[in-house]
Amino acid sequence: MTRSSSSSSAVAEQKGISVHDSTGNSLSVDPNSKTEANILPETEYEPQGDPEQGTTEKGAPPGLMDPSSFPDGGLEAWLVVFGGFCCIGVFQDYYQEHELSRYSASTVSWIPSLETFMMFLGGPIFGKIYDNYGPRYLLLAGSFLHVFGLMMTSISTEYYQFILAQGICSPIGASAIFYPAMSSVSTWFFRNRALAFGVMASGSSLGGVIFPILVQRLIPRIGFPWAMRVAAFLILGMLILANLTVKSRIPPSPRPFRFMDFVAPLYEIPFTLIVLASFFFFFGIFLPFNYIILEAPVVAGMSPDLASYLLAILNAASIFGRTIPGYFADRYGRFNVMIIMSYFSAILVLALWLPATTNAPIIVFAALYGFGSGAFVSMAPALIAQISDIRQIGIRTGTMFAIISVAALCGNPIGGALLAREGGGFLHLQIFTGIVMLVGSTGFVAARWSLVRWELKVKV
Image (cartoon, rainbow, N blue to C red):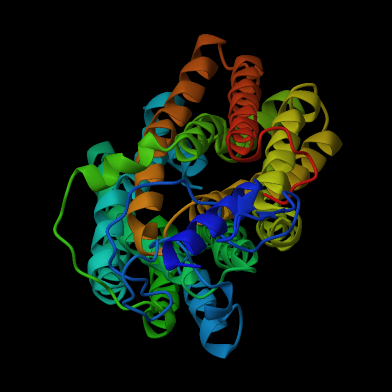
């Protein structure tokens, strides 16, 4: 059989249809047979060989990868994950009570919203730079900008200064750190990719446990400026470790900048559905993180000391939410687990946070929601990697995060506006959060359907 007919048979086998050999005999293919191959859309390609395989054979589809070529473990691979873990990054409540007390909650919320927006908006640019030149220079430049922005925040006193330092400079640096770390991890793992992403992403959750408590305890003793500097020095130490350990398994392949490289993935239905689902889910996912500290004392009469630990509870639970679902996702399907966890998070908002009026259910919600929402943060890049050519992982994940950055920018101010419209009540904010997350969860169902239709027992 010729090479072209072999390739046609392989494609047909992945689709679960009947193929024939050179003599015309029918070869039956089991559509339910398990495969570790990536689910890739059929697209036109240039025969350039496959660097994943270390070959230059013409005619090989660039997205076709041998799973055995991925280490999926070992010291070197897990050191890369550790480096990503070190790329970790609660200030709204403090700002509203001190430096920015004359501004509304909606106005102050633009600072963390802009911070998230700028971090994700840089995705396409930093993704392209990563694909062309690797992670080294991005990590160095990002480390400087991230720490410099935090240092400048420590001497800020005006609203515009916080916007420039914490809302723009620091997150641009964090963006230049986040994308090469995430993309590098994907080159070392295939079967255990979701778990690896989860371990890496859990670093930010650990930071979310440590830094709120650290800053809260340090501010009364040494003041806000030095509390920020202490936090910045701690992050600097972690970033030094990240710069020493994060690297890509695949050599960079410089290519000219083309705008269509960023637009082309949107012509693929599964990719577009994942992006839309993530966009709506992102509208609501961080609202409980930003407003539960403000809501608990008002609605449940929770003491300020206890309320200050709610964010730590959310982030502590998120550590497990970013790792445990990833482990099961690699074994039972990443789309399958993502759908379960996203619906779980949305239902928690409407069924537990919304009616909660005492301390106990709010604390339980914080723990469960931290676990459920953590899965989205770690698994969204794994979904994109599953349907992508590994050599374009930087551009494709960057495109997704750049689009959902708009939701990250608007989510918190919308929540603040709903809060002000209700005269300080949180009902409309909670309903908005639950509904947009339900819409996003349904979008993941649509993305799965575009790949395997209604085959419920398929690992996807």
